Image 1 (cartoon, rainbow, N blue to C red):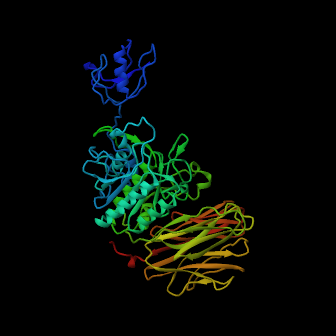
Image 2: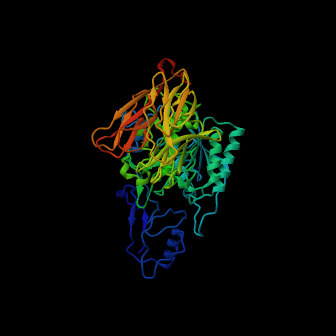
Image 3: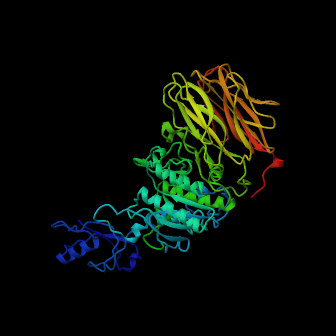
Length: 602
């Protein structure tokens, strides 16, 4: 039976949309009219009535007792959307979205579908470029209605800078069409779009500039390289992690280390999950953002709104917050901006049990937020984050490697193994870049390398190796020790010794073990140790740096228990052990700029 959405002319309906099912048989002419409205070749089945269906009418036709036909749409309570409320840290102004600034100094390039620029949310905020590189739509019955072709891009543009739904409402958005009406594109089209943007920036520089990539494809070395080149030229790239409930490292551009990759969370700050799909996770995700039931502009009409979910929406939030931060510190590099995003984020709010088991340690437990109005953070503060490698092979002396981004300095290197069979870690240099290399031990099940990557140190840093096995790796005079590492060439367990932070700043080594010291020279930097012993039978011991101090190094000191590894989690040094009465200690190296030498604001 066929029915349809109608608006009747009876005054008591007050203009409400009603679903009406007819009680009379249709004539042959009326059946033909219904077919035209449905925009399909489907005819009503013999001896049956028209079945219920929502549609958008584009033809001047009428059915009995119907004055006009309108597609159903959403209505919304007039309060600040949950996603905008969530990213605010200034909670006392309930019902008002008040970011530190509107991002007006920042330009955003949106690589997406086309955009309905006449929508009241983004009118005069979005410029449509003359670039268009999309494949043909699949199938023979694709209706290229403008509202369909603009759907994804319009919604994303509204999240970035919409008048009422946007995060950075002063940021200008430039639309670069690389996705067709079905939301599909090609790697070659994305590459051409990036090349177009590069040429545009060379002819008419926009600084600072953000490129928003709300799409994913299979892993592409070529696409990743093109994104890396854009970052090297000074742009900030923000990408969706993907909605496949999978490892983000398997997709591009999400897997490119120089891109800020964003996963999605729901209202409860838990990973977005919808049936068999959900947000990607893992070490290639940098941060999470709201991505569930996000209200923004709908392309159905110039005043319509709708909700959409996914990591595209999450990435749009991060692009908006990035615009706010760049408005405050326009000279920040992409690496510095990421550190600022992580610094202002809400930590440890995601339930680790909701993440895939093999990604729980390497997935950052951080949800983005706007800067607190009282924040004094500048682009030159000492900020650090942890970068995990993939797990090494399980064979003896197999290695895993972690690297920092361009513009970050590696201030320490540690390792972790689930069963504790690890031969330590060392720091190597390749092509002018430091690498944290973890070594799997005899009988190991694979090992992770964890690099501590920092910005704002403003120091000359070097990694010094002990002159021989069993000897100390010592920093030169006037250098600060920011972290220690050690490795065993035999494949046996390599336990650390307590760092020396007195007159001598050094990393001691046990017999047949090589130690490595990260040493930084600057008059403004000061570092100190904090230590905490495990209590009882605990398999985990932690120690945190105090406010105004930044964790640069993390080590585990065994008192007899097997140390599975040490890594930094935010500003906390976490050490996993085999447990038992003997236990272990967590040793944190905490550094900061001396208050009298703290770098001035930009």
